[in-house]
Image (cartoon, rainbow, N blue to C red; front, side, top):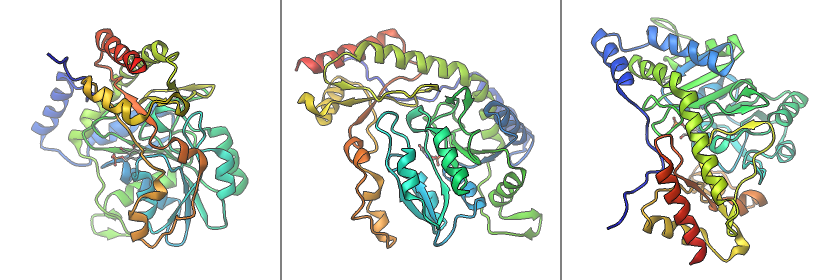
Length: 372
Ligand SMILES: Cc1ncc(COP(=O)(O)O)c(C=O)c1O
């Protein structure tokens, strides 16, 4: 009989979230009330920024923050080619052009040198992604930002609680964008948050997220409905209290796994840069190209062994067909690190619900793969 399937990610919710949401449901106050305000305050305190603005999801956090940075038609925004497409879509949604810079093979985040090479007079923002729970090289990126007078928007959708030199990501750039989608470090089902120290930016974000309104009947700029509900905020407040302990388990699980498998001859583990507290949204491993093994063989082996995994992003995002439909031609783009790495990263199950029995089973399955 085959062993139970090990899921790659699950939400971590108990009676506390149920009670918090139930209280709001019974109160009859569902929109833009005390819970949203409190969640914003607590989240800003946690990240270490003066302000936080709750929104409907991580994608809207990105495009609202970018819009306040002035990114629009004819402008360029520098993005990595290895991320969820929402990072790029937020740029496209504003009519701006995504300009791809290469990634660092050690941490899989934006490579600062490549970013600097891509700056033009049209560059309106730099959009690093803290991929898989790592942290992009913020010192170097902020130095480039300052030198050229270009704001930085940190995509923190995969890095709640990740630290760079002892400070939380989302507090370095001119703004940070978080997602609370169901599989993230903490969740509100769907949901997002913008963090910033800039009061004016936070106020503009609040206006854009709610129909561009400053009063009940005053629409001062184009906005849509990107609000977070009170139910989501109530759930978020409970999840935020649990975040550090959930992250600790996630980190412990990932370090346990990586330590046991790091010497397998076919495995390559993306190197963590110094001074980063990685929160392992993913527990990422790669297959050494010279090992004779392939990522497809590994996927088949994990599937046959009833072990869940993630594999994204399969190609550098400048190859996505949607870009052509928008009249953008990236056919000559070739970023060597992204070309080599995209499609070759697997995320192993590492979520806080896993114990040693499951982790040891994953180790045994990976050891067996090497002997095939
Ligand atoms: C790196 C990155 N950016 C943006 C997003 C978009 O967040 P959401 O799904 O909440 O819109 C995600 C979400 O999964 C993500 O992983």
